[in-house]
Image 1 (cartoon, rainbow, N blue to C red):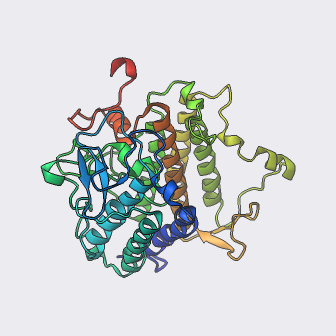
Image 2: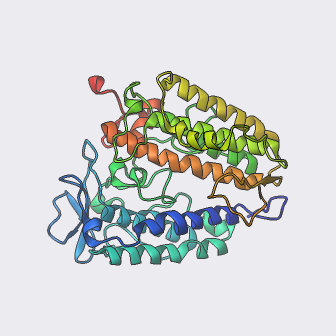
Image 3: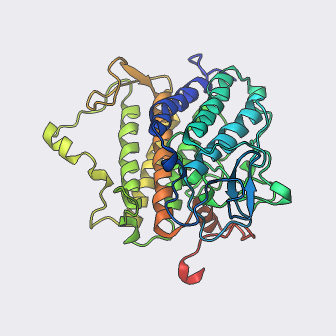
Length: 407
């Protein structure tokens, strides 16, 4: 791996980001998980882990006393998945496949894996698989070993000659398991899938295909990955009405419009800091009480907001980000803010590089939220929405999203 001018590598800050999310967000949320919660089915027919012989889907994977649900072709609408199912997917399809494909770990597949019937057993499998490759193996991986396998794929994603409807997509496991990396997407990682544009077929622009375009260097890569994550919000909002972007369909208060508005403001704030580096940005002149009262207001879609105006502001923010990053010194120090309790007190400054990586994970996290909100509104999942926006051809297992009246 080629070091950047400061002598560091991409690997170290990326692994630090991953391990921070594992240690502070994903794994702590699963502490105390009970067997009842692990196997709880929020709706009849949810895909789950079952005692052998109990599952009812077309295909049941697993070599031990418990099996996991699959079906081909994917049902419409896509099924809801349980915590048990999603943990199995993280263990096998996300961590397991990558530990094998990139770091030489043992092969795992959905067909022969011994699935856990208890929460404790599943969490041990998750911890063991994470420890097997993240961050230990990754820190020791060379450029050759980490890239030799190309895009990793768990063995057995085509059980008995068929393509299962299990996949992991663009954003994966840096937050709590979510629909983008679950069976609810109804997609497969097989080679006979619908055409997803290859890197050499991709171009810059407002619409981003299924993968990030090829990148020329570190700076170009940072910009490209920001563009990809930002574009996910346009896909999540694709085809929604003005009423629907204001709907909060989950137990929380998040809406599609509110998420777009929030990430636009979030990106603006961080890019202001990059543009001002090594100095801090101009201070907020509002009284502290007013700033505190306004906290969270950027999640609120007002009467004057429209989907078009929110997306236009998001695109404009992206254009400014590209302009600032085109000339920013990636090693320049960015003073750590002191106006919120979650910022570290023992660090004086981050680098511009760190801030951009942080912004990528901020957008990715909220894009995952947008996936969940959108799927809860009308059942649409990301690949269906991207296929609809990009005009991908319909196949037996991937149907581009269309409004209900024309579906």
